[in-house]
Image (cartoon, rainbow, N blue to C red; front, side, top):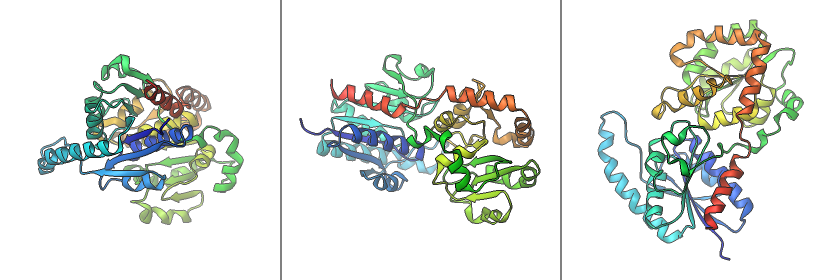
Length: 363
């Protein structure tokens, strides 16, 4: 039997790229001879991250439509036509047995052209509120793998499979890593540890919130592992001189950071939410209000509504200290949040998604 040709498209943000790479890794583990080709958007981070993961990628000249009137939208029709033509050319040359989309600008033209050539297609939707691309594609694809309930409001119910979002496999047994994590971060475990996550680039409002309240955390015997992000490291690295404060541009040992954290303050991107469900620690979400369709607030609300996390909106940051101090003093609340969020975990998501891909390949 000839090796499978697998086309994967998704990008723009890590939330689309890392699930795509996780899916590719699982496919490669099952079918070592498979040929995997990614399609991304030129000048977006997938053009760097995908080759780093060991896969080939082709770039399309594509970007999204701005939701407000702007001159940038004038070039969109030309980019779309160019991308459809380029995607058609890639598909004719690569001859994929299946095309997989994980969201983002490039997956639209790629899966549209795959559908036109009668190639089986599958999309993976990370968020509780789908993006425009996947909402447009849903009627033509064969399967839709989702991470949240009630997405039949947007997608055909007979195509939906609830799988969850792919997560890093090293997060599945973090509770056994507590001592290694304490040693690695050189923490005083007589104190509580707050892990602050604003995403790989960083989150200005979260960083400002932490900076403003450093004395509060110290007085409460709370140590900080603070990922301030690439954009802000030069501004905040001076606080590494403070006792009980560790400022990181990026955290490479996320499993150890999660293992040693008593509390987590985080954005609410889909991948982060899925990881935090597996980690099972008390979480306060501060969703970014600056993402399409306000995805992060909807993601966080879907967890908060199940009494599995707390949320403080950026517009209400003045309430953060009250929320955090209340949680710090309420051990029962900490335990219930941990148990409830852990019950929402779907640790076999990557395997389940590739099961669906395999089913389509065998039809």
